[in-house]
Length: 66
Image (cartoon, rainbow, N blue to C red; front, side, top):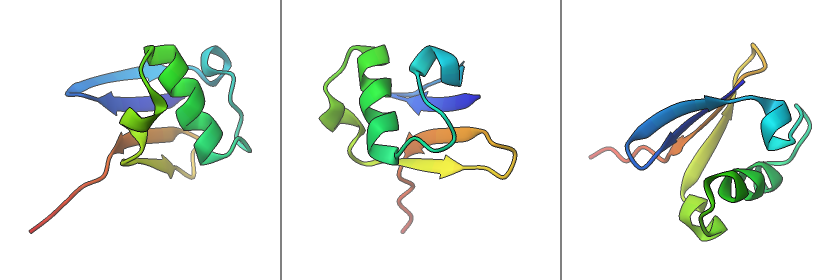
């Protein structure tokens, strides 16, 4: 499962729907997510991709502290 936090919304998308696998690069995941969201890929440039041991992928804005 791909968990996405984008512009204040949270939602889940299956890997199949995005066309990604466990070995898909971060760049390719962002490219496919931008196509899915119908936004320019540069809107995801500051987003972090976190691959969990469970196999899930979390795509979220970079956290800034301080």
